[in-house]
Image 1: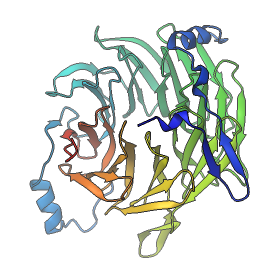
Image 2 (image 1 turned 120 degrees about the horizontal axis):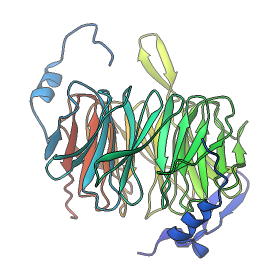
Image 3 (image 1 turned 90 degrees about the vertical axis):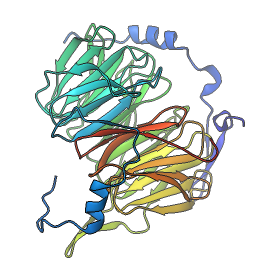
Length: 417
């Protein structure tokens, strides 16, 4: 099958057709991007159950079905907030927890290779560098540490304001972070040379370095999205106002060549943005824009996670009310609406198929066929909500992080594999 990213895509708005230009014609090599960044002007620098009763089904789930191959339980007595796989081999996982710790461990047997200690608050961000040689961990208070995996030692640390997100550059030893005061930071690791991108005066809630390695898309609490030039330090596009979101950004994803960014917000909508023009070329909203909290409370049906399918022109949007909406990118029409028993915390498309996985607040991992909208399989074993998960390149296993103090490894079995 030919890569759909090689072809130009036509996106149909209300009255106009916008062509997304192919960015792959002169894709720079990783070494070129790393060299390019040398020119950057761096400066020195749980809700209580009031009733107390459990249903028979809940008790059965806690005591019963566990489809996982391995349970990682080193985060004793604490929520596990985040999980990432090492990008080179997909054989190591890093998890961060409420116990102010992160662990690097083998997916095969759970053996701990590295304990990341010394944090002052819950570790909510933990990610491997592009070459898997380093792990960055960040806690809620803003203390960021970088660890050399092979040497099992801390090689760098820095303290910022309350941390919102943390991400490595896709092909250089450069780390980015967004904070509660709206600042976006960028460091060379381990030298620590630093550059900051101006705050608009509100939280930088989500961020993503685009595949070209030269730009980053950042979403903010006021609903704006900025596309930053990492070398020059200026915002090349600011998306706001009527076209933009009317509430805080919650999540952000880009397509394979970085020409499109999909954003989600507490306002109940997802926006499709052309990163070359800065124009909003699509808006996607749930059929119901409210979610019931109790008998007399409602809240906006927040978008919690978004993603692009790599092999077909499809996108997925996960909502707080438990709806997984799959849209056709070309027509922007709703293709399937897949219902969950509880809100969706995270979703991820498989690398080379049209299967999308969802982690839900009911503690279940589910696989959905993006073409038919049918559920392929589901995996149980957590006694509390799934907070994060990741699927390996071959889509043969998933690693989950949950509110029951555990991370789990699930083998993903499908009839076509």
